[in-house]
Image 1 (tube, rainbow, N blue to C red):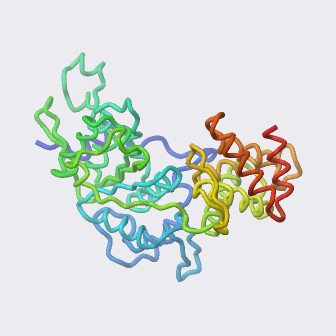
Image 2: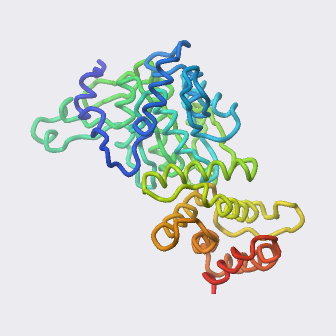
Image 3: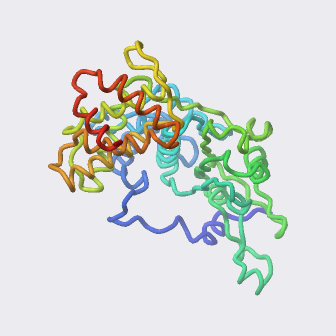
Length: 379
């Protein structure tokens, strides 16, 4: 016997709290509701069962474009189009999607926006950690009702994955390789048989058409809790690369900082675009181990220096300039953030940073203010 959609949704209390007007970070389906609505209104292409948009419209939502009525869809992901097309197509099949990449390659961001565009709900989320229990993927129990009445549907507390199966929507699992291997393997039956047994009740939940799952994993976590071959076969793996060029990374950082800044009432990004370019250049050179012109090899620090960290440094610098400066992003506003991002190991990373500062930054035309600001915070 299968648990009905209505029973499962009722047990979960619906789709969670309604969004508030003052949310610090609205969910994707809320923040970009006007874009999703415009796409849905003009999307006349075939849609898989229970999809809010066609695969073409989902890809357009992520990559950006201009609709026939003039509505501008802002890019959510800046990168190769084929990567997004493969990811979207995977969700239209019976295979789950695994987004793999180094930290800061927008895996979580892409996962959230894919779920928002496909299902209109990005909140069915399991956050993977070393302590994630099996119940987070399968189901748990309301122990007050369990003790009072024994196992029953009313005592069942469905996981986000169970809810997605019952509703025919998209579930998300973040940091899959952080989850213990025996808990990971709970997904094998769900992804292969599209069913979740409930042996305590002699029942099961069968996945409704439209159900799928997006998982993310950090490829630097390989060996922590690597996926079994049986589980890996259930996923189609899409690798998200680091931005290919300085220009594309500057564009990504500028867009995200602008979005975050508007929610925090910070100054606009264009006033500090030169500083954004400097931060991105420093991170890329230290990450790659060579300067942009290819002439000087440099040592790489222990941290990843990802695009996400560049966004954090610039956002912090904007806050400094807004509250303790003139509102224009300057070298002194980002210098401390750059130092904090680069020097994670006080012993080895500080040496790497000092060598880079003296051999590269000091000699670069137009970077004297940045050099002095970095020297001051590092003194």
